[in-house]
Image (cartoon, rainbow, N blue to C red; front, side):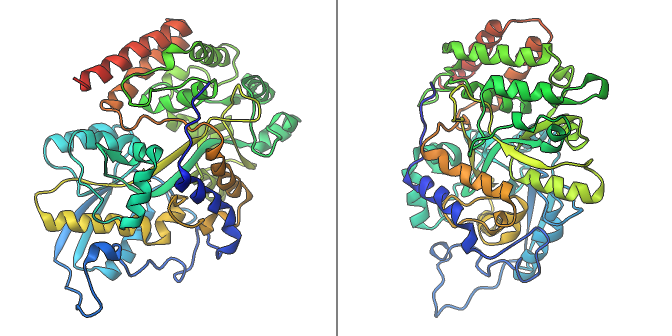
Length: 477
Protein backbone atom coordinates (compact mmCIF):
# COMPACT_ATOMS: atom_id res chain seq x y z
CA UNK A 1 0.00 0.00 0.00
CA UNK A 2 1.00 3.59 -0.34
CA UNK A 3 3.35 4.94 2.24
CA UNK A 4 1.25 7.25 4.37
CA UNK A 5 2.96 10.54 3.57
CA UNK A 6 1.75 12.56 6.52
CA UNK A 7 2.18 16.26 6.59
CA UNK A 8 4.02 17.50 9.65
CA UNK A 9 2.20 19.09 12.55
CA UNK A 10 2.33 22.45 10.81
CA UNK A 11 0.08 21.43 7.94
CA UNK A 12 -2.15 19.29 10.10
CA UNK A 13 -2.83 22.17 12.46
CA UNK A 14 -3.43 24.52 9.58
CA UNK A 15 -5.76 22.01 7.95
CA UNK A 16 -7.76 21.59 11.15
CA UNK A 17 -8.18 25.33 11.32
CA UNK A 18 -10.08 25.18 8.03
CA UNK A 19 -13.02 23.76 9.99
CA UNK A 20 -13.28 26.97 11.98
CA UNK A 21 -14.63 29.01 9.06
CA UNK A 22 -17.79 29.88 11.01
CA UNK A 23 -15.80 32.30 13.12
CA UNK A 24 -14.76 34.34 10.11
CA UNK A 25 -16.79 36.99 8.30
CA UNK A 26 -18.63 36.13 5.10
CA UNK A 27 -17.07 36.78 1.71
CA UNK A 28 -18.30 35.99 -1.78
CA UNK A 29 -16.93 36.38 -5.25
CA UNK A 30 -19.06 39.46 -5.65
CA UNK A 31 -17.49 41.16 -2.58
CA UNK A 32 -17.79 44.86 -1.82
CA UNK A 33 -14.99 47.37 -2.13
CA UNK A 34 -14.58 47.22 1.64
CA UNK A 35 -14.14 43.46 1.66
CA UNK A 36 -11.68 43.44 -1.22
CA UNK A 37 -9.37 46.15 -0.01
CA UNK A 38 -5.91 44.67 0.29
CA UNK A 39 -3.60 45.18 3.21
CA UNK A 40 -1.47 48.29 3.04
CA UNK A 41 1.54 46.12 3.72
CA UNK A 42 3.52 45.09 0.66
CA UNK A 43 5.81 42.59 2.31
CA UNK A 44 6.27 41.25 5.80
CA UNK A 45 7.79 43.69 8.25
CA UNK A 46 10.81 41.45 8.67
CA UNK A 47 11.78 42.04 5.07
CA UNK A 48 11.08 45.76 4.71
CA UNK A 49 13.64 47.01 7.16
CA UNK A 50 11.38 49.98 8.06
CA UNK A 51 11.07 51.38 11.57
CA UNK A 52 8.55 53.62 13.24
CA UNK A 53 10.92 56.61 12.94
CA UNK A 54 11.92 56.03 9.33
CA UNK A 55 9.88 57.77 6.65
CA UNK A 56 8.95 55.41 3.82
CA UNK A 57 10.93 55.86 0.64
CA UNK A 58 9.15 56.85 -2.54
CA UNK A 59 8.62 53.87 -4.82
CA UNK A 60 10.96 53.70 -7.80
CA UNK A 61 9.53 54.33 -11.26
CA UNK A 62 9.84 50.89 -12.82
CA UNK A 63 7.83 48.44 -14.89
CA UNK A 64 7.31 44.77 -14.07
CA UNK A 65 6.18 42.06 -16.48
CA UNK A 66 3.88 39.49 -14.93
CA UNK A 67 2.66 36.36 -16.66
CA UNK A 68 -0.25 34.38 -15.29
CA UNK A 69 -1.99 31.15 -16.16
CA UNK A 70 -5.72 31.84 -16.70
CA UNK A 71 -7.06 30.49 -13.41
CA UNK A 72 -9.95 31.53 -11.20
CA UNK A 73 -12.77 34.07 -11.30
CA UNK A 74 -13.57 36.82 -8.82
CA UNK A 75 -16.86 38.22 -10.11
CA UNK A 76 -19.79 36.65 -11.98
CA UNK A 77 -19.41 36.80 -15.73
CA UNK A 78 -15.62 36.93 -15.75
CA UNK A 79 -13.52 34.66 -17.89
CA UNK A 80 -10.89 32.66 -16.04
CA UNK A 81 -7.94 34.85 -15.12
CA UNK A 82 -9.53 38.18 -16.04
CA UNK A 83 -9.57 39.18 -12.37
CA UNK A 84 -5.80 39.70 -12.48
CA UNK A 85 -6.24 42.82 -14.60
CA UNK A 86 -9.78 43.81 -13.65
CA UNK A 87 -9.57 43.48 -9.86
CA UNK A 88 -6.09 42.74 -8.54
CA UNK A 89 -4.07 45.24 -10.58
CA UNK A 90 -6.24 48.31 -9.77
CA UNK A 91 -5.69 47.68 -6.06
CA UNK A 92 -1.93 47.50 -6.59
CA UNK A 93 -2.01 50.75 -8.57
CA UNK A 94 -3.69 52.53 -5.67
CA UNK A 95 -0.82 51.57 -3.38
CA UNK A 96 2.12 51.78 -5.79
CA UNK A 97 1.32 53.94 -8.84
CA UNK A 98 5.03 54.32 -9.68
CA UNK A 99 5.56 50.57 -10.01
CA UNK A 100 3.73 49.76 -13.23
CA UNK A 101 2.73 46.12 -13.64
CA UNK A 102 1.94 44.66 -17.05
CA UNK A 103 0.01 41.40 -16.76
CA UNK A 104 -0.26 38.93 -19.63
CA UNK A 105 -2.41 35.79 -19.51
CA UNK A 106 -0.66 32.78 -21.03
CA UNK A 107 -3.00 30.09 -22.48
CA UNK A 108 -2.50 26.59 -21.10
CA UNK A 109 -1.79 25.13 -24.53
CA UNK A 110 1.95 25.45 -24.96
CA UNK A 111 2.45 27.32 -21.69
CA UNK A 112 5.55 25.37 -20.68
CA UNK A 113 7.16 25.78 -24.08
CA UNK A 114 6.58 29.55 -23.99
CA UNK A 115 8.17 29.92 -20.56
CA UNK A 116 11.18 27.69 -21.27
CA UNK A 117 11.79 29.54 -24.54
CA UNK A 118 11.68 32.85 -22.66
CA UNK A 119 14.19 31.54 -20.12
CA UNK A 120 16.55 30.41 -22.87
CA UNK A 121 16.33 33.78 -24.63
CA UNK A 122 16.69 35.73 -21.35
CA UNK A 123 13.26 37.29 -21.83
CA UNK A 124 11.45 35.66 -18.91
CA UNK A 125 8.88 37.77 -17.04
CA UNK A 126 9.62 39.19 -13.61
CA UNK A 127 6.80 37.19 -12.01
CA UNK A 128 4.95 34.08 -13.11
CA UNK A 129 1.69 33.32 -11.31
CA UNK A 130 1.34 29.56 -11.68
CA UNK A 131 1.57 26.37 -9.64
CA UNK A 132 4.76 24.45 -8.73
CA UNK A 133 3.88 21.51 -10.98
CA UNK A 134 5.24 23.68 -13.78
CA UNK A 135 7.36 26.26 -12.03
CA UNK A 136 9.68 24.07 -9.93
CA UNK A 137 11.19 22.81 -13.18
CA UNK A 138 12.33 26.36 -13.90
CA UNK A 139 14.03 26.35 -10.51
CA UNK A 140 15.83 23.18 -11.55
CA UNK A 141 17.10 25.20 -14.53
CA UNK A 142 18.50 27.81 -12.14
CA UNK A 143 16.10 30.49 -13.35
CA UNK A 144 14.16 31.26 -10.15
CA UNK A 145 15.03 33.69 -7.38
CA UNK A 146 14.93 32.67 -3.73
CA UNK A 147 11.85 33.97 -1.91
CA UNK A 148 13.20 33.36 1.58
CA UNK A 149 13.98 37.05 2.18
CA UNK A 150 10.31 38.03 1.95
CA UNK A 151 8.88 35.20 4.04
CA UNK A 152 8.73 36.05 7.78
CA UNK A 153 11.27 33.98 9.71
CA UNK A 154 8.63 32.19 11.80
CA UNK A 155 6.75 31.09 8.68
CA UNK A 156 9.95 30.07 6.92
CA UNK A 157 10.99 27.93 9.89
CA UNK A 158 7.63 26.18 9.89
CA UNK A 159 7.83 25.45 6.17
CA UNK A 160 11.33 24.04 6.48
CA UNK A 161 10.20 21.69 9.24
CA UNK A 162 7.79 19.99 6.84
CA UNK A 163 9.53 17.67 4.38
CA UNK A 164 6.29 17.17 2.46
CA UNK A 165 5.72 20.90 2.08
CA UNK A 166 9.33 21.54 1.08
CA UNK A 167 8.93 19.02 -1.76
CA UNK A 168 6.33 21.31 -3.28
CA UNK A 169 7.82 24.77 -2.73
CA UNK A 170 11.61 24.41 -2.88
CA UNK A 171 14.54 23.48 -5.08
CA UNK A 172 17.80 22.37 -3.49
CA UNK A 173 16.49 23.30 -0.04
CA UNK A 174 15.68 26.90 -1.04
CA UNK A 175 12.07 28.11 -1.13
CA UNK A 176 11.32 29.45 -4.63
CA UNK A 177 7.52 29.51 -4.63
CA UNK A 178 5.29 31.10 -1.99
CA UNK A 179 3.84 28.59 0.51
CA UNK A 180 0.70 30.62 1.29
CA UNK A 181 -1.48 28.77 -1.20
CA UNK A 182 -3.04 25.34 -0.89
CA UNK A 183 -5.68 23.55 -2.89
CA UNK A 184 -7.49 20.26 -2.41
CA UNK A 185 -8.22 18.39 -5.62
CA UNK A 186 -10.78 15.71 -6.21
CA UNK A 187 -13.63 15.03 -8.62
CA UNK A 188 -16.58 17.35 -9.07
CA UNK A 189 -19.72 15.70 -10.35
CA UNK A 190 -23.07 16.90 -11.60
CA UNK A 191 -25.40 15.22 -9.13
CA UNK A 192 -28.38 16.24 -11.30
CA UNK A 193 -27.44 13.60 -13.88
CA UNK A 194 -27.56 10.83 -11.29
CA UNK A 195 -30.84 12.10 -9.86
CA UNK A 196 -32.38 12.08 -13.33
CA UNK A 197 -31.16 8.50 -13.81
CA UNK A 198 -32.61 7.46 -10.45
CA UNK A 199 -29.11 6.47 -9.36
CA UNK A 200 -28.20 9.03 -6.70
CA UNK A 201 -27.71 6.16 -4.24
CA UNK A 202 -24.67 5.02 -6.26
CA UNK A 203 -22.75 8.17 -5.32
CA UNK A 204 -20.51 8.11 -2.22
CA UNK A 205 -22.60 8.03 0.94
CA UNK A 206 -20.04 8.14 3.75
CA UNK A 207 -18.91 11.32 5.53
CA UNK A 208 -15.75 11.76 3.45
CA UNK A 209 -17.32 10.58 0.16
CA UNK A 210 -15.03 7.68 -0.62
CA UNK A 211 -15.67 4.82 -3.02
CA UNK A 212 -13.98 1.77 -4.45
CA UNK A 213 -13.18 1.35 -8.17
CA UNK A 214 -16.14 -1.04 -8.53
CA UNK A 215 -18.50 1.49 -6.93
CA UNK A 216 -17.05 4.21 -9.13
CA UNK A 217 -17.63 2.13 -12.28
CA UNK A 218 -21.20 1.33 -11.27
CA UNK A 219 -21.91 5.06 -10.94
CA UNK A 220 -20.47 5.75 -14.39
CA UNK A 221 -22.66 3.02 -15.91
CA UNK A 222 -25.76 4.61 -14.42
CA UNK A 223 -25.43 7.82 -16.45
CA UNK A 224 -23.56 6.69 -19.58
CA UNK A 225 -25.89 6.95 -22.57
CA UNK A 226 -24.24 6.62 -25.97
CA UNK A 227 -27.40 7.62 -27.85
CA UNK A 228 -27.54 10.94 -25.96
CA UNK A 229 -23.79 11.47 -26.10
CA UNK A 230 -23.52 11.47 -22.31
CA UNK A 231 -20.80 9.63 -20.40
CA UNK A 232 -19.83 9.23 -16.78
CA UNK A 233 -16.34 10.69 -17.21
CA UNK A 234 -13.96 12.05 -19.83
CA UNK A 235 -10.46 10.63 -19.85
CA UNK A 236 -7.88 12.54 -21.89
CA UNK A 237 -4.41 11.77 -23.18
CA UNK A 238 -3.59 14.25 -25.95
CA UNK A 239 -1.02 16.16 -23.89
CA UNK A 240 0.86 15.98 -20.61
CA UNK A 241 -1.97 17.53 -18.59
CA UNK A 242 -3.58 14.11 -18.86
CA UNK A 243 -1.22 12.53 -16.34
CA UNK A 244 -2.98 13.82 -13.24
CA UNK A 245 -6.09 11.65 -13.18
CA UNK A 246 -4.03 8.54 -13.94
CA UNK A 247 -1.50 9.25 -11.19
CA UNK A 248 -4.26 9.99 -8.69
CA UNK A 249 -6.10 6.74 -9.29
CA UNK A 250 -2.88 4.70 -9.57
CA UNK A 251 -2.10 6.04 -6.08
CA UNK A 252 -5.62 5.07 -4.98
CA UNK A 253 -4.84 1.51 -6.03
CA UNK A 254 -1.98 1.52 -3.52
CA UNK A 255 1.04 2.24 -5.69
CA UNK A 256 3.77 4.63 -4.62
CA UNK A 257 4.87 6.84 -7.49
CA UNK A 258 8.42 7.70 -6.37
CA UNK A 259 10.92 6.75 -3.70
CA UNK A 260 11.77 9.23 -0.94
CA UNK A 261 14.77 10.88 -2.60
CA UNK A 262 13.26 11.00 -6.11
CA UNK A 263 15.95 8.74 -7.57
CA UNK A 264 13.45 6.23 -8.90
CA UNK A 265 9.95 6.03 -10.31
CA UNK A 266 8.56 3.11 -8.32
CA UNK A 267 4.99 2.73 -9.61
CA UNK A 268 6.19 0.12 -12.08
CA UNK A 269 7.37 -2.08 -9.22
CA UNK A 270 3.82 -2.58 -7.97
CA UNK A 271 1.35 -4.98 -9.62
CA UNK A 272 -1.38 -2.62 -8.44
CA UNK A 273 -0.34 -0.10 -11.13
CA UNK A 274 -1.08 -2.64 -13.86
CA UNK A 275 -4.49 -3.21 -12.29
CA UNK A 276 -5.17 0.53 -12.28
CA UNK A 277 -4.29 0.85 -15.97
CA UNK A 278 -6.46 -2.18 -16.76
CA UNK A 279 -9.27 -0.40 -14.91
CA UNK A 280 -8.89 2.69 -17.14
CA UNK A 281 -8.86 0.54 -20.27
CA UNK A 282 -12.06 -1.20 -19.12
CA UNK A 283 -13.81 2.17 -18.80
CA UNK A 284 -12.93 2.91 -22.42
CA UNK A 285 -13.81 -0.56 -23.73
CA UNK A 286 -17.17 -0.62 -21.93
CA UNK A 287 -18.20 2.80 -23.27
CA UNK A 288 -18.41 4.48 -19.89
CA UNK A 289 -16.16 7.41 -20.81
CA UNK A 290 -16.17 9.82 -23.74
CA UNK A 291 -15.01 7.94 -26.87
CA UNK A 292 -11.48 8.32 -28.22
CA UNK A 293 -9.78 9.71 -25.10
CA UNK A 294 -6.46 9.55 -26.97
CA UNK A 295 -7.66 12.59 -28.96
CA UNK A 296 -8.95 14.64 -26.02
CA UNK A 297 -7.44 17.22 -23.66
CA UNK A 298 -8.36 18.52 -20.22
CA UNK A 299 -10.03 21.48 -21.95
CA UNK A 300 -12.34 19.08 -23.80
CA UNK A 301 -13.17 17.32 -20.53
CA UNK A 302 -14.11 20.59 -18.85
CA UNK A 303 -16.21 21.73 -21.82
CA UNK A 304 -18.12 18.44 -21.90
CA UNK A 305 -18.76 18.71 -18.18
CA UNK A 306 -20.16 22.22 -18.57
CA UNK A 307 -22.42 20.94 -21.37
CA UNK A 308 -23.73 17.97 -19.31
CA UNK A 309 -22.01 15.55 -21.71
CA UNK A 310 -20.10 13.92 -18.86
CA UNK A 311 -20.86 13.43 -15.21
CA UNK A 312 -17.66 14.52 -13.53
CA UNK A 313 -14.27 16.16 -13.95
CA UNK A 314 -11.01 16.57 -12.03
CA UNK A 315 -11.48 19.72 -10.00
CA UNK A 316 -10.42 22.07 -7.25
CA UNK A 317 -12.54 24.56 -5.33
CA UNK A 318 -12.26 26.99 -8.28
CA UNK A 319 -14.67 24.82 -10.25
CA UNK A 320 -17.55 25.77 -7.98
CA UNK A 321 -17.38 29.27 -9.46
CA UNK A 322 -17.32 27.86 -12.97
CA UNK A 323 -20.71 26.33 -12.20
CA UNK A 324 -22.19 29.32 -10.37
CA UNK A 325 -21.07 31.89 -12.91
CA UNK A 326 -21.68 29.62 -15.90
CA UNK A 327 -25.30 28.98 -14.97
CA UNK A 328 -25.81 32.74 -14.90
CA UNK A 329 -24.08 33.60 -18.17
CA UNK A 330 -25.19 30.50 -20.09
CA UNK A 331 -21.76 28.89 -20.48
CA UNK A 332 -22.88 26.01 -18.25
CA UNK A 333 -25.95 23.95 -19.09
CA UNK A 334 -28.36 23.27 -16.28
CA UNK A 335 -29.45 21.75 -14.12
CA UNK A 336 -26.06 21.25 -12.52
CA UNK A 337 -26.05 20.48 -8.80
CA UNK A 338 -22.37 20.08 -8.10
CA UNK A 339 -20.83 17.75 -5.54
CA UNK A 340 -17.18 17.10 -4.64
CA UNK A 341 -16.02 13.50 -4.12
CA UNK A 342 -12.74 11.64 -3.73
CA UNK A 343 -10.87 9.64 -6.35
CA UNK A 344 -11.67 5.92 -6.05
CA UNK A 345 -9.46 3.83 -3.80
CA UNK A 346 -9.10 0.11 -3.20
CA UNK A 347 -8.93 0.81 0.54
CA UNK A 348 -12.55 1.03 1.74
CA UNK A 349 -13.39 4.26 3.54
CA UNK A 350 -10.17 5.98 2.52
CA UNK A 351 -8.72 7.87 -0.44
CA UNK A 352 -5.31 9.01 -1.62
CA UNK A 353 -5.47 12.79 -1.18
CA UNK A 354 -4.37 15.27 -3.81
CA UNK A 355 -3.24 18.25 -1.71
CA UNK A 356 -1.13 20.85 -3.52
CA UNK A 357 0.81 23.71 -1.92
CA UNK A 358 2.55 26.74 -3.38
CA UNK A 359 1.93 29.42 -6.01
CA UNK A 360 3.91 32.06 -7.85
CA UNK A 361 7.60 32.54 -8.65
CA UNK A 362 10.05 35.35 -9.38
CA UNK A 363 12.63 34.96 -12.12
CA UNK A 364 16.19 36.03 -11.46
CA UNK A 365 17.00 39.49 -12.79
CA UNK A 366 20.23 41.43 -13.20
CA UNK A 367 18.29 44.51 -12.07
CA UNK A 368 18.23 44.09 -8.27
CA UNK A 369 15.52 46.74 -7.83
CA UNK A 370 13.17 45.00 -10.24
CA UNK A 371 13.79 41.63 -8.61
CA UNK A 372 13.08 43.13 -5.17
CA UNK A 373 9.81 44.67 -6.32
CA UNK A 374 8.82 41.54 -8.20
CA UNK A 375 9.04 39.70 -4.86
CA UNK A 376 7.02 42.41 -3.15
CA UNK A 377 4.32 42.23 -5.82
CA UNK A 378 4.16 38.45 -5.56
CA UNK A 379 3.91 38.47 -1.77
CA UNK A 380 1.24 41.17 -1.83
CA UNK A 381 -0.74 39.34 -4.52
CA UNK A 382 -0.82 35.94 -2.84
CA UNK A 383 -0.69 36.78 0.87
CA UNK A 384 -1.82 40.33 1.51
CA UNK A 385 -5.25 40.63 -0.08
CA UNK A 386 -8.44 38.61 -0.33
CA UNK A 387 -8.88 39.11 -4.07
CA UNK A 388 -6.36 36.37 -4.86
CA UNK A 389 -7.59 34.13 -2.06
CA UNK A 390 -11.20 34.40 -3.19
CA UNK A 391 -10.62 34.16 -6.94
CA UNK A 392 -8.24 31.21 -6.61
CA UNK A 393 -10.24 29.52 -3.83
CA UNK A 394 -7.00 29.33 -1.90
CA UNK A 395 -6.48 27.80 1.53
CA UNK A 396 -3.52 29.18 3.53
CA UNK A 397 -1.64 26.29 5.17
CA UNK A 398 0.15 28.80 7.41
CA UNK A 399 -2.88 30.91 8.27
CA UNK A 400 -6.56 30.97 9.09
CA UNK A 401 -9.49 29.35 7.36
CA UNK A 402 -10.64 31.41 4.37
CA UNK A 403 -13.99 33.15 4.57
CA UNK A 404 -14.97 32.10 1.06
CA UNK A 405 -15.80 28.56 2.24
CA UNK A 406 -18.45 29.69 4.69
CA UNK A 407 -21.46 30.06 2.42
CA UNK A 408 -21.05 26.83 0.42
CA UNK A 409 -21.40 23.36 2.01
CA UNK A 410 -19.42 21.80 -0.85
CA UNK A 411 -16.45 24.07 -0.18
CA UNK A 412 -16.78 23.29 3.51
CA UNK A 413 -16.48 19.63 2.55
CA UNK A 414 -13.16 20.31 0.81
CA UNK A 415 -11.97 22.17 3.90
CA UNK A 416 -12.95 19.20 6.07
CA UNK A 417 -11.35 16.76 3.65
CA UNK A 418 -8.02 18.55 3.95
CA UNK A 419 -7.93 17.59 7.64
CA UNK A 420 -7.54 13.92 6.63
CA UNK A 421 -3.95 14.55 5.52
CA UNK A 422 -2.85 13.47 9.00
CA UNK A 423 -4.41 10.02 8.48
CA UNK A 424 -4.66 9.25 4.77
CA UNK A 425 -1.89 8.96 2.16
CA UNK A 426 -1.03 12.16 0.29
CA UNK A 427 -0.11 11.80 -3.36
CA UNK A 428 3.48 12.81 -4.04
CA UNK A 429 3.33 15.26 -6.96
CA UNK A 430 6.96 14.74 -7.97
CA UNK A 431 7.36 18.44 -8.66
CA UNK A 432 10.90 18.57 -7.31
CA UNK A 433 12.24 16.00 -9.77
CA UNK A 434 14.70 17.29 -12.33
CA UNK A 435 13.23 16.68 -15.76
CA UNK A 436 9.68 16.43 -14.39
CA UNK A 437 8.12 18.18 -17.46
CA UNK A 438 9.91 15.67 -19.70
CA UNK A 439 8.45 12.82 -17.68
CA UNK A 440 4.94 14.22 -18.05
CA UNK A 441 5.45 14.57 -21.78
CA UNK A 442 6.70 10.98 -21.98
CA UNK A 443 3.66 9.53 -20.25
CA UNK A 444 0.76 10.63 -22.43
CA UNK A 445 1.83 8.85 -25.68
CA UNK A 446 1.97 5.59 -23.73
CA UNK A 447 -1.53 6.16 -22.36
CA UNK A 448 -2.68 6.84 -25.92
CA UNK A 449 -1.24 3.49 -27.05
CA UNK A 450 -3.06 1.76 -24.20
CA UNK A 451 -6.38 3.24 -25.21
CA UNK A 452 -6.11 2.29 -28.88
CA UNK A 453 -4.96 -1.25 -28.09
CA UNK A 454 -1.33 -0.88 -29.17
CA UNK A 455 -0.04 -1.93 -25.74
CA UNK A 456 -1.27 -3.88 -22.74
CA UNK A 457 -1.48 -2.38 -19.24
CA UNK A 458 1.73 -4.25 -18.31
CA UNK A 459 3.57 -3.03 -21.41
CA UNK A 460 2.33 0.50 -20.75
CA UNK A 461 3.61 0.76 -17.20
CA UNK A 462 6.89 -0.97 -18.13
CA UNK A 463 7.54 1.57 -20.88
CA UNK A 464 6.54 4.52 -18.70
CA UNK A 465 8.84 3.28 -15.94
CA UNK A 466 11.72 2.86 -18.37
CA UNK A 467 11.28 6.37 -19.76
CA UNK A 468 10.80 8.00 -16.36
CA UNK A 469 13.82 6.34 -14.80
CA UNK A 470 15.96 7.17 -17.82
CA UNK A 471 15.00 10.82 -17.39
CA UNK A 472 15.79 10.73 -13.68
CA UNK A 473 19.16 9.11 -14.37
CA UNK A 474 19.99 11.67 -17.04
CA UNK A 475 19.54 14.59 -14.65
CA UNK A 476 21.23 12.90 -11.71
CA UNK A 477 24.54 12.33 -13.48
